[in-house]
Length: 408
Image (cartoon, rainbow, N blue to C red; front, side, top):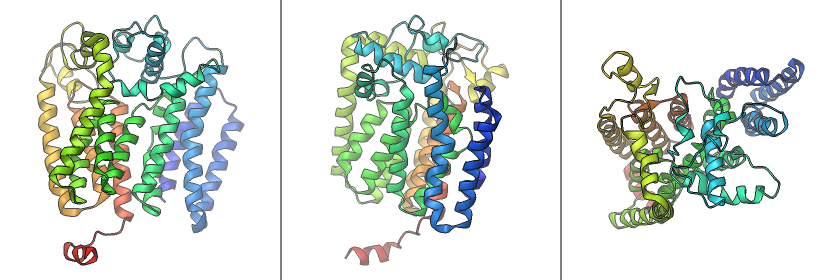
């Protein structure tokens, strides 16, 4: 039933995407009808449900992304059919391969101006790269290999990250809970639309889920390594670090093990950041910190539909680039969520709660930040929903006494 409830709105969104691409109505109907028949078979035959879940994700999530990639490289268009975030990541990788510092680079002349942009102000990504290096460093081997073919699309790497994410959810929640978590994660309405443009949160999320799996398997050094790499892929990963750490404690991590994990995470992060700091530290800090959290003419303008937009529209903040203590508010909200997570996860000891708390941390902290977009809403909502459905179907944890007897 979860698959049916999520597939209907996802199919409706995919229908609109295909219409925008001028697909024949008969082809769209055949595609979605075939998907619907497969889902119906899964409702009637219990033994088909695992296969049908995978087919639905491939059809309603992956297929539109593949179609978008093919369309961008085959159909002539004056406008790039890719989101500005994924396209900028692709261009940043190209700059690195050409020996050009991606921070402070001119993305406008590189072609980013052709990416879709629906705001009243010019795209900030034209002259600033706000993401940390992992976002464009990890795809470099594939990007370098693809140059031999004459083209590269960042969404190819994002599809790989999606596959890894699906596999990690299946490992974290074996059986039905993992299938439900993956269904909720990928078929939450709107995910296919974000993925068509380039869901660049997926590499970071895959690393966070990998760290959570390592914590659950008591491999704390691997947990630290993956968390360090996640943070330097996208800063939002920092919001999930404390709740993953709490799960490591639930699984028996001692102070010494956590310190070793923290040291390894720091080493991984420093090793990734150092080349770009040595390249041009000023440009790096201007793009990733000052531009995002600062104020003035050269600052990211308040926009979206979060707390900042409400304060701007209500007159509390007078200008879109005025200073306001958003960082202080983010810290308060983040600490509150982490404290709740510490108490809740330790008391309940349910793995699904870690996803829920990590999603809430990202959702609420980003809501009170300088800008909050639909992609931020999706980032938190997909983790929360995946955690909730996995938690509902996962077996109840053993009582403390029973766990002790079993361990003995």
